[in-house]
Amino acid sequence: MTGHPLESVSHTGFEKFVQIRRHLHQYPELSNEEFETTKAIRGWLAEAGIRIVEAGLATGVIAEVGGVRPGPVIAIRADIDALPVQEETGLSYASRIPGKMHACGHDFHTASLLGAAYALKERESELQGTVRFVFQPAEEKAKGARQVLDSGVLDGVQAIFGLHNKPDLPVGTIGIKSGPLMAAADGFVVEVDGKGSHAAVPEAGLDPIVTAAHIITALQSIVSRNVSALQSAVISVTQLHSGTAWNVIPEKAVLEGTIRTFDEQVRAQVLERFSQVVDGVTSALGTSGGVRWIEGPPPVINDEALAQLGLEAAAAAGLEAVVPVPSPAGEDFAVYQREIPGLFVFMGTAGTQEWHHPAFTLDEAAIPASIRFWTELADIALKQLASGGGEQP
Ligand SMILES: [Zn+2]
Ligand SMILES: [Zn+2]
Image (cartoon, rainbow, N blue to C red; front, side, top):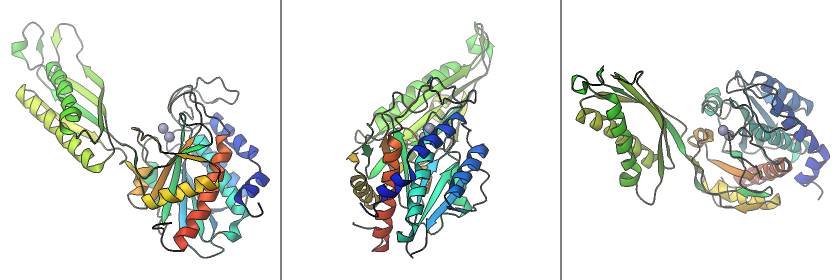
């Protein structure tokens, strides 16, 4: 076992990273407000003598290990932000900030990446290249990845890796697949403008509520009639606001919701049909309307060669690799993957609730598993990329 990454990790001790995760869990901060979290991460990196790369980010930290021996540069990313959720886990280390919670497990991602940075720092002189650690802000608002890319700290990075905890996978398993893994998550706001009138005299007005109802019904035909049976998409209308009184036809109705797709072509097709449905229904019913898009992250699409490296690293780390079911949730890791070949994986955490639930939990035994995976993957990826560009391992 001499020189094995596991050895150096156990030497450092996993307990520290469990404590780090619990500290982060108690003091969650929302997207782009991660000031204390940023300070704490800087402190933990400094304790181990890990170089911080100044990126000019208001929140978030970039650090680096390696460069003693020449070689490629890879990046591993963890997100650090929490959610506006009131925690209901009853844990001794539950959130101490009312209305804020690490309900997506980004505290676990951060602690695991710190563990990997510590482990790789201990064997820095052996690394064939450089590993850059990205502690990214504002994932939940799908803004942070863009902020990191715009800072320029990933220029020259040849591959980027990220993980998300997965409550429905047991600890010791890891979900790895090439191709689509998570959805593009776009939002929409539809405003229907009618003409108000007395509810008893509808012919004097143009009813936006009837139009909104027809729009909602017609939208159901997009997934069922326009998207191929071999592709998938979700359209959910989640808000409908209109009216103020039982006897008044209102002036306006507003619908909001989200569209999830796993393929850029399907995404473009669904968005186009959506606009056509809104235009067609409003004009047929004499009202007017428009769609405002809230563009979310693109789909997470994994690089095939990097997925192979992920499988090798999983085996080296003693994890059982499974083929995960793609998730219709969005993830701004996809923004990196548009510019840098990337691999995003699901780490089994045996949670009792899904992401964003007030009682969301995870099994901390997944922290050592994640640290082992990152350490093995960094080693394997640097060697592979150094020896030939990372095509087929
Ligand atoms: Zn989330
Ligand atoms: Zn998340």
